[in-house]
Length: 140
Image 1 (cartoon, rainbow, N blue to C red):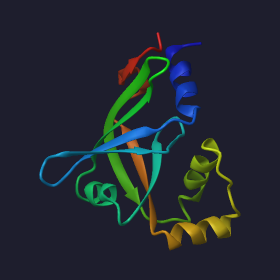
Image 2 (image 1 turned 180 degrees about the vertical axis):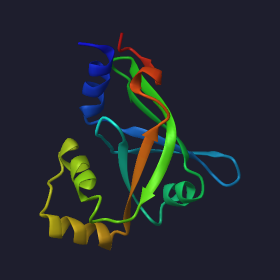
Image 3 (image 1 turned 90 degrees about the horizontal axis):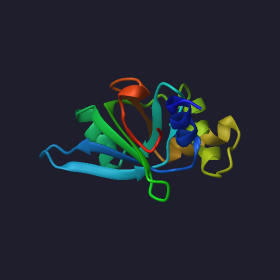
Image 4 (image 1 turned 60 degrees about the horizontal axis):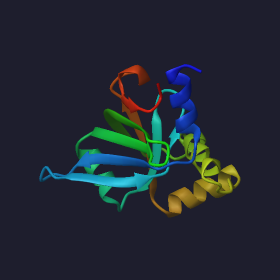
């Protein structure tokens, strides 16, 4: 298995990604989040009342850290976030997050209604480079 294959397998496991952005006053803001990785982008669901939403609508620069404290592995990835508010268009990405963490996936109409009721948006994180450029430890 290549290092990139090991990274892909690691990202398919149900782990938290610590999503980091920069507050308006320059302080970092870090929150653990569930995520999906499709081989190109990381996807994180959040709501419009959360600090993450305000941060990334103002400044798209971001960092994601995914770790495994028991296996001494981690990934640190820099990139940018695109805040996506078209829930219907992003439904497949919202769907991808739920089963990874053992959550039931309702029908499209139920999921869409729930996302709208919670004022959800999708953060689409584009890494600054391919996996070979990320800070990765323990995937040798």
